[in-house]
Amino acid sequence: MTEAANHLDGLAGVVILAGGASRRMGTPKAGLTLPTGEQVLDYHVRHSLHLNVPIMIADNERGFNVSSALVLHKPQSPVSYISDYGSTNSDGQIATGGALVAIESALQRLVKLNNAAALGNKKSSQSSWLLVMSCDSLIPAADLWQKLQSFIVHAADKQVICLTDEDHLYPLLGIYRVSIEADLQAYIDSGHRRVMPFIKPVVQTVRFLKDWQHLTNFNTPTEFTHACAALDDL
Image (cartoon, rainbow, N blue to C red; front, top):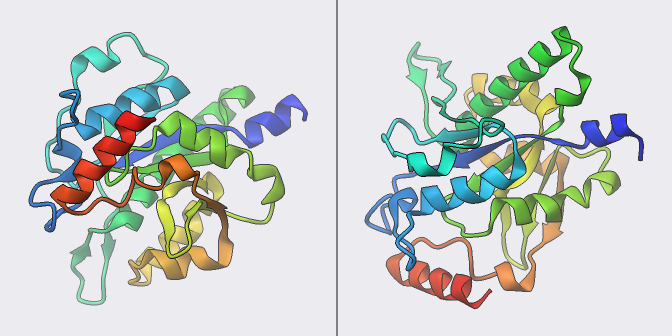
């Protein structure tokens, strides 16, 4: 594979989805504490730092803080907070909320970064994919990127690559082409928020690794306890 192709298949950034209400859990999942004492959000940031790309936290303005010790010496992986993309609905109100508006905001940020790199003739700084991480999972970001990246070459006509099991698709554990941003914006601007109808025509699915099956989709305290146990078993 040529150097140019490597960049086209490269990772442009990570967005950590941390804005869910987590009603069944009783507390936001991003703030849950692992047996090690680390909060889930810090866990995802720590693992994302290994990827050396911008890290965006979409917390729906919940005010989560990331440990400053994590990011002191990683200027190549700046951590920032992004607001959900807002669009005007038929009543003239600004509608926000849901995963897609967070993903759209992250994609817009990466489009701007790629455009700035292009203007500066920094071709090596332009990459094509956004890694989406959900706080209902403990799959390490670098491991997820490594797994999904291997399918890019076989999914040339796909815009989204995400995990799946026998029963569910996991679009919030996947990678999105930065070039899908305009289509996603148009979808949101037309009043839609549902993830599945948007991604199904353009998605490539990847089966869960066996060791990951119990690390994700925890929605209750009991399920979180099981996920922590599975993490400890890795």
